Image (cartoon, rainbow, N blue to C red; front, side, top):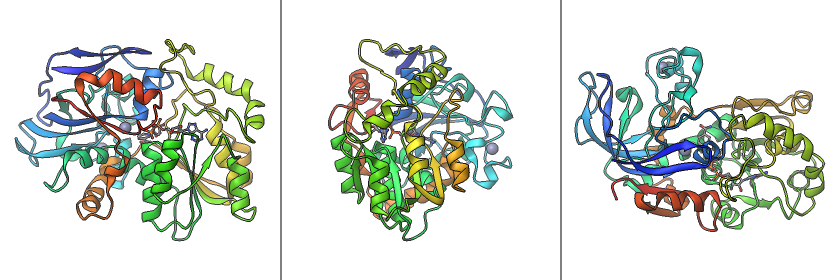
Length: 406
Ligand SMILES: NC(=O)c1ccc[n+]([C@@H]2O[C@H](COP(=O)([O-])OP(=O)(O)OC[C@H]3O[C@@H](n4cnc5c(N)ncnc54)[C@H](O)[C@@H]3O)[C@@H](O)[C@H]2O)c1
Ligand SMILES: [Zn+2]
Ligand SMILES: [Zn+2]
């Protein structure tokens, strides 16, 4: 079958690989009818989420049909349409039964302390072959998969595999109450769904920060007041907008590949931190060493930029929610400022299985239309070109659905 295979930092290929097989009675084989490219994939290819094993099939977003069910799978039968949540869980351990499915004690083959198990990730997360492929083996199928109703077609369903639940999780962690002023950093697909979710939770003013015009436009369409960090200083702008108080809730939907202003009033402050950012980059890129592969797969130049801005802009006693991904090698955080403002910090990998069923219901009921975030649908034959366009932030390339069987 065809699949996107990771070979090394800056090196991914569309290849013929053997089809997966059922390995355990709790596995299911899924024929993928939709997959997608995610900002998390970019971190791995850029080397800022290190520890990938050569030969791993990439991709952690999928929708498909059960092709074969292991002997002990009870909830699914051949032919069922399912969404494959990015993280895998057992449904039984103390974490899974208290809403922390992404910290499941049983799903990660590296043991209880290894943390999140997800498709197509670094060695410490499994590794479990990913979903940018024609077929995938889904471990722990009963507690992990979710059935799809016929009214939620693939192009909406694929957004329920990872990015909508993650955006919702980000808004949930931020403890948004009706009327709260919220700031979302990053207007990529995850940030856009964070904006949508904050509004569902009754947020008052929702601000959104990025520097890409097409993404800022989408954020405005979703109801946010936007700040272009190349034109305005996000901290000053948000303080001005809140009578000097700051926002009560902030969400980092950018992660390790943050970059800094190239111009405008925020440029000087970020430039002054250049040497610290350089050190952070060196610490993070244990196997990437800062190379840029001919202008492609360029890591962000300011890993802690968003964390700095978010802590500065929060009101005293506010909440910071971090859903942007940082590797274990990232150690910088403005802890002193956060401590002295009595901030609450919440963060982590999305426990998809906690949110996916209710978000399917919201989409089926027409309360939210996730399709607004999808910008491209590409056949697998064009996947590498699609990856490059998404990595380049080419205008209009916001979220790419892949068609694994086309
Ligand atoms: N926690 C989880 O479970 C989980 C799940 C999915 C994705 N993620 C992470 O969420 C993050 C966003 O994912 P995505 O697919 O939307 O990625 P993306 O790369 O498409 O979007 C990131 C956006 O951040 C913007 N940005 C860069 N520097 C910035 C800055 N200084 N200030 C404000 N915006 C800035 C970029 O212009 C871009 O639009 C990634 O880190 C991804 O790995 C986390
Ligand atoms: Zn994803
Ligand atoms: Zn579990």
